[in-house]
Length: 212
Image (tube, rainbow, N blue to C red; front, side, top):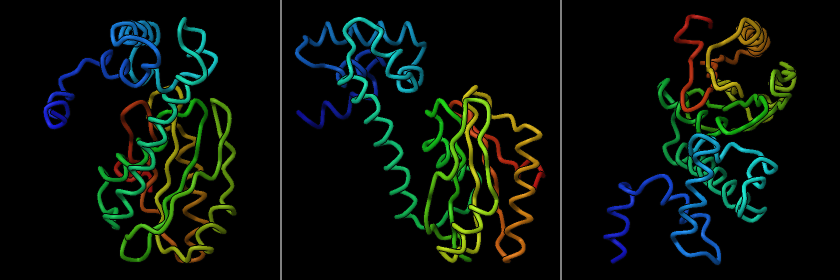
């Protein structure tokens, strides 16, 4: 019976899946109706999972516990992504880098700048979200990145940050800070392999754009 449920879950509607997650002292029908209302008002699953507590809880029937459940889904996705990379060890393709940073950063409502540390064989060492800012910008300090790199004796780094607006198109400021960080790390013989800019469900590689 369990196998049958798992097999057909990919065919479930967004409302049915979300309703299952949110169900609490309600029938399946009322939970699915609540999920449908959330999707209608917030536009998509991404909109629901990205919504602030105030926005989500303003919808009838949704309280803090359901908001926490939605955030738990996001956190599980992020941890699964990190653990997958830890098991695979190497991050060698642009597609892998994009997928990793999308999983980590796409749901933030503020700008977040993160760094992946790799050794000389491009094997995963560590991941950290170093800087968080307003919805428009984050203050990024190259010296903090240098300290982080030295602490873990990394040989290569991947940079990533999100655009809360949803568009991954890099700004001139993104290119400038990438060059500043790259110049700072070059002084200690560490290479910036790429800077991934994350939007909603997609990302842009500055290395592919020729900006590194």
